[in-house]
Amino acid sequence: MWDLGIKDIIDILIVAWILFYLYRSSSKNDTLVLFQGVLAVFLIWVVVSQVLQMKLLGAIMDSLISVGLIVLAILLQNDIRRFLVRLGSRRRWKSLMNIFGAKTTGQDDHLWIDALVLACRNMSQNKVGALICIEKTDSLQSYADTGEIIDAKLTTRLIEQIFYKNTPLHDGAAIVRDGRVNAAACILPVSHNARIPKELGLRHRSGLGLTELTDAVVVIVSEETGGISLASHGRFHRDLSINMLQKLLLKS
Image (cartoon, rainbow, N blue to C red; front, side):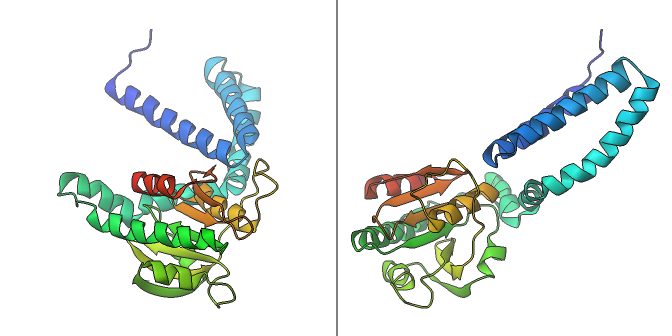
């Protein structure tokens, strides 16, 4: 019988959390088969080296595991980068510290969300395409640096002006941080998810791509149909009404 102590339980929980995080990330990025293959090789290595204690095969497996870790780091570099960014995010640590302090009423959030929803309604009616990224705990500064820094209070008129057809800033994404438009005309990573419907274009693929790499929420207005979509955690909410869009933004 194994003599499990508190350290052993903590050890098991940490490993389980890491495996769950990798599984969730790989399932979003279509690398689930790769994750399952790596996990199978790891389990075989544990059985051969630790349980059966087969020295020759164990030595071969040790070498494969050492090289495999380097290959795995290359293949999963985006997932590793995202994990490290989230771990070191100042906004994440700030939100953690807020647990022990006073929480805000959220009234300011209501104001800028109302302004954003109204702008989306107007753009939808006029079939003006828009791509609006709302920063959460993961920093979007690296994407903001690809566009033009604005740093202005979010208003309905400002959003509509940014995405007005043929204006210099309309081609790209706007990034919203703490109720302010941080930047516009930003370049986003494009999702290569094969399950994205064929009728969705580059604007939708870019919005979804950002949510696959960060915890941002992205609002997309279609230029062709005027339909409003919201992307988060690598998933789409499509053909949203104005009321539903507002509810999702307030919940996110």
